[in-house]
View 1: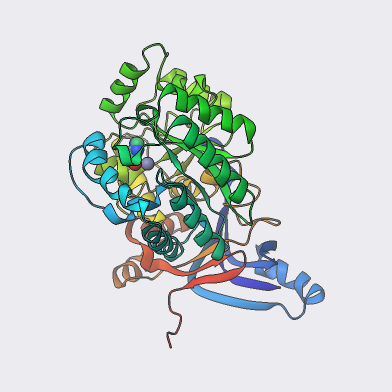
View 2 (view 1 turned 90 degrees about the vertical axis):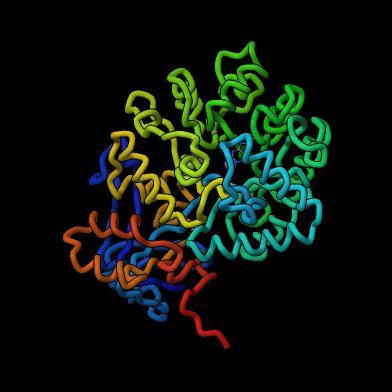
Length: 440
Ligand code: GUN
Ligand code: ZN
C-alpha cells in the first residue's frame, strides 16, 4: 500500500451542466491511498490519515509540495504515426492530409519504424501526464499491433485501432472492406481486454471509406459491441461538402455514420466543429462522445468549436479534449486546455478553469463511458495520476505569487505551463515518469 500527500483536484460531475462549485473537488492537503493499481481511499489528509494508522501502519507516503495531483490526463483523439509531422504547414485539412499525412503514414509499412514511433509517442504521453489516449494507427495492422505491445509493456490503459481506409488515399494506404474487417477483428481478438488495453474500430472518416467498408465496420462493432469506435466528423467546410457529394442520400454527415450503425455509446467523433442541431440532438440521444481538438482546429484553420453546442442542458453531449497530433501542435493537455480556453473566448463562451481541467480528465472519461475507472481521483478507480509542479518555470513561479484563488492558480497553470510541469506520472500506482529522477 502506498499514498501520495499533496494538493489534489478532481471532478465528480460535469461543471458545464451543474456548475464548477458542485462538480469540482479541490483538497489543499489530500491523501490518496492506493494498492494493486487501484485507489483505495482519497480525501483530506487529516481524515484519511486517522483511518490509515490503524488499517496499514506501514503505508509509504510520498509528499509533494508546491504541486497539484490530478487524475492522469486523457487524450481523446490523437494519431501516433503523425508524431513525426507536427508543425507541417500547408493549406487546410485535405491539402495537409495529402501533402504530409498520407506520405508519413506510408513509412509505417516498416514495422521497426512503427515500433520506434510507438515507443517515443508513449514515452512522450507519460512526460506530459497523459495516461490514457484514444489513438489512431495507420492502415497497417502491424503498426497497431506494435503500438499495443509497447502500451502493454508500460501497463497503460490505451485505446487504439488500425485505420480502415479503402478509397481517396494512396494505394499503399488502402485496405479493402474485407481486409479491414479481418485485420481489425484479429487485433480485437488479440488486444481488446488484454491487460488494460481496448480496441477502437477506426474508419478514418467517411470520405476515405466506401459504403461497403462502413458497412463492414458497423458489422464488426455489432459483433464486438464493447469495443470503442472512433472517426472524424465535420472538421472542415470542404470536408463537409465532400461528404455531401459522396453520400447525397443522407440527411447530414452524422447520418452517414448512423446509417452504418456507427453512432452509439463508446463512439468518439473527432472535431464536430460544424455539426448542425439535428446532429447534436442525435449525439445526445445516442450517448456518443465528441473530442474537441483546439490546437489542431487552430493549426489547420478548421474553425471554432462552440461549447454551447454540446453543453446544452436540454440535450447535453459528452465532450473531452484531444490533441489530434500531428495536426495538433502539442501532446501536452495543459497546452490543449490553454487553447480551448482561447477558443471559448473567441466564441463568447468563457471557460472557467474547472471546465478546462474537467475536459482533460473526467470529461474525456465520460465520453468513453469509463468514468468509473479513469479521469477522477476516486475509491476503486485506477491509480493513474499526474503530479504537476506549480512552479515549473521562473515566470510561472513569479506569477503564482499573485494568485488570490484556486481558480486563478488553475487558470495560470493552463495558460502558461507545459510538459515541464509534469513532476511525476503514475501508472496503475507505479511511478512511470519522474522529471527529476537521478540519471546514473
Ligand atoms: N480527417 C481524416 N483524417 C484526419 C487526420 O489524420 N487528421 C485530422 N485532423 N483530420 C482528419
Ligand atoms: Zn484526427
